[in-house]
Image (cartoon, rainbow, N blue to C red; front, side):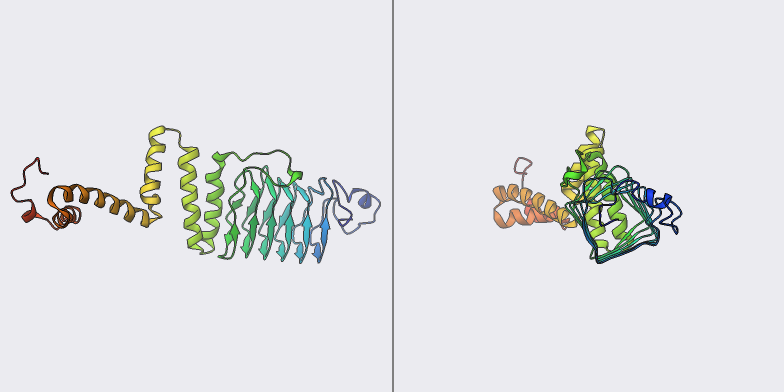
Length: 276
C-alpha cells in the first residue's frame, strides 16, 4: 500500500474490513520495518497523522513524499534518503538518524526534531520556515546547509522564509552541534545567530549599528583575527601620520610606542604641538 502511494487515511478501509487486525487505529504504523525501498510518491498527503513510533527505516529512498501531522518517536533511520519531500506539522522525538540525507526537502509549518541524535546526516538545499531542532545532538560529520529562501520542490507550494526566524533556526543548529561536542561548527552557527539577530531582530537603529560594529570589528568575540586586523589598520594609519612628519623609522617607532605603551619620549623631545 505504501509502494502504491499511500495517501490520506490509506489504512481506513482495510482496518474497517478487519484486514489489519493488529493495528489499533487507521494511523498506527508503530514498529514498522521499512527496508530497501525506493519509492516515488504521487502528489498527495501520503502520510497524514500516521504514528511511526518505534519504526525502523533502512537503506531506502523516498521521493516526493508528504508527511503531514505525523509522529515518529524512538525510531531509527539508517542509510536513507528523503528527496523532494514535504514535512508539515511533523514531530520527531528521540529518533536516531544515521547516514541520512534530506535533499531539496521543505519543512513548512511547525515541524520539530526533539531529543534526536544525528550522525553523518546531511541537509542539502532544504527550506525551513522556523526552528526545528530542540535538544538535539549533531556529530562533526553532520552538515546543515543554510535554509533556502523558498522551497525547491514543487510539492511544497508557495512559501517564503521570514528572516526574523533565522536567529532561532541557527540557535537550534548551534545548540545541537554544541551538545555533540562539535565546537567548531557550534561557533560557526553562533556567529550566524548573532549576525541574524543584529540584521533582522534589532528594533532600534542604535542597537543595530552597535551590533554591526561589533560584528565587523570583533566578530562578536568569535573571530579574533578580525580584532588583530582592526588593530593593524589603526596602527598603520597612525604610523603613516607620524612617518610623514618624523620619517619612516622614527614615525614607526613613535606610533609603536604609543600603541604598545612602551614609550617614545626621546623621539618626541622638542617636537611642538603643531608637529604632533
